[in-house]
Length: 248
Image 1 (tube, rainbow, N blue to C red):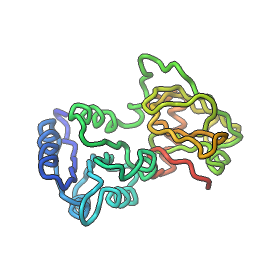
Image 2 (image 1 turned 90 degrees about the vertical axis):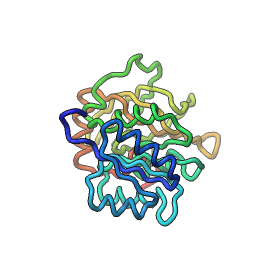
Image 3 (image 1 turned 135 degrees about the vertical axis):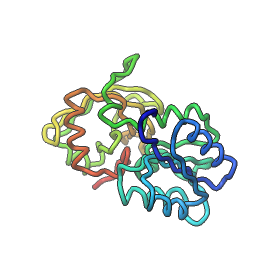
């Protein structure tokens, strides 16, 4: 970050020791850092500072992390980048991504892991999605729909700012698995979507014959897909980072 304006980060946690540790860590890495002990204090800072990165606990007094996330994404879905931190099962990863969080971390976590995540998610999407993964994924998920809009209405495929959610049958996907995805549309904002991603959540149907559903965070998009998706991305301010699948 030398010769550049420092990235501004806001740490929100009512545990003083953890808050102090995170402030020290990000300050040492060259960030301009603010801290708050609850969501209301964080909102006051966000009203006056151009914050690029928000790390917030979920359980806090006055205004918790979920209320803060909702407030932030209602104002601007793109900034700041939000990481939710929780020590409890207050919310599923699926729900957090649907509310707009880019990352969900569970306490305790490693600072090195957090630093790697922050470096990745602060990259602009056009840079983050331009390098194919090594090694390449060994499994592919191929999907075909008559149109993007019909797939959304039927709750079998949807797009967010950072990935896609889709329904599938057959072999089960695993959380954390790296897969290739190939989606084709007869009608839609783009004819196809080809790339790779990390499975962030998996949900099985309530009945044995129901489709399974998964949320995929994009790690690479083909050049053709990337151009078309970024154009769609720029004209559709999607609050969900990865949407949950709900009939429209």
